Length: 488
Image (cartoon, rainbow, N blue to C red):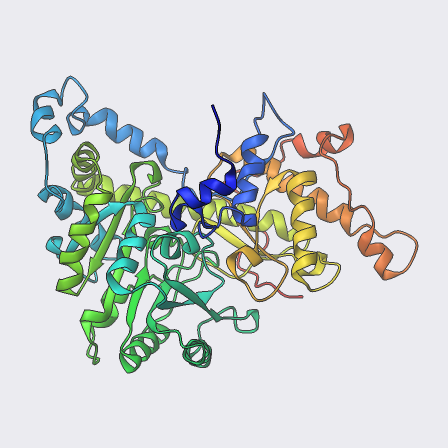
């Protein structure tokens, strides 16, 4: 019996199945593989890789677990909820359960401070934000068309928006000189670049709050974006999946608020992507949402959502939870409080070895500035430093180049997907690494830069330093400002 070779498989399968558009070979995903092959455990594998490349919110699971125990009827798979099993388990259309859409619309308004309301009839569900992004790409663009995307941006957008749709992404280059803010000049430059390449621009995609920056867009910037897309007659897709992760002032401003103001705006061009993966810490539930002000997009999106529906069991549970006003109020407040505490503790740990992050007030991560640790300002030097951090320091952080950052030396590091003890180990590893890498040795400056590049986490002395618990209480006062802006 013969077997086909890998080359033959490429002829047997579709171009989509065999192309490399998924982006799985990105350093962003390679870091995950390094973690998966050697995961850290304080007892079973204390010298393993700590996962700091996953933007997951695990800080308030206890609140959700507490609610579930108090509300067993919310699940149809409990003795208390079994009476509703049949009604939920039988076929449902792809519009979604009415209570689910009502609950999500209400929650979206609540996490935006109650300053705007959402229409449940415009809620289109999908399998997580990944599915929602693909749905909106299918609805708005043809293969070969493009979206402008301010950089640095989420690496998996290449998968979500491009892989199966054939849509292109054109970076809008933002720079550290103005804290990576989006400027009209950068937008125009990217648009002109696409025009010169005969690429049809169908929209602008923004992430607010930003992944990976952890920053939010101010009112004037949002207004300028609306003016830009109206002038160009292109769509504006606003990924707002980190809305409830804002943990300090200034407050988040949704694009929904902007278009409610007295400004000329073609609402048919405005679309919001949302999910419960970050704000509620429920990525495994795969609750993704497209909210569009365009009736045709809503109708088309609903047809397409049949390929990635949220299970009715999940819809039923989520509806019960989000319609509990007392729980939602408490969860939002406590989540912001815990994120702020974790963010401050992490920033303070970095500042002890003069490592700063971009000033931020949202998200589950920091945009860490390691430019001074580069041997030279190149992507190659950034990758060399990243390999050292992954394989020697045993931390999975994500290099800025995987986020299409134009400046080498920035890294996204996630802080909300682990317990306090693991975070302390991670901080100690970073501190020890920086101290050793910057140790003064005889010789010239270049020699000092290259000294102590090999850092082994299997060293007994280093293990003793790294594993010694020195975490401050989350309620301890912070001696240094957590918002010190990155400077070199």
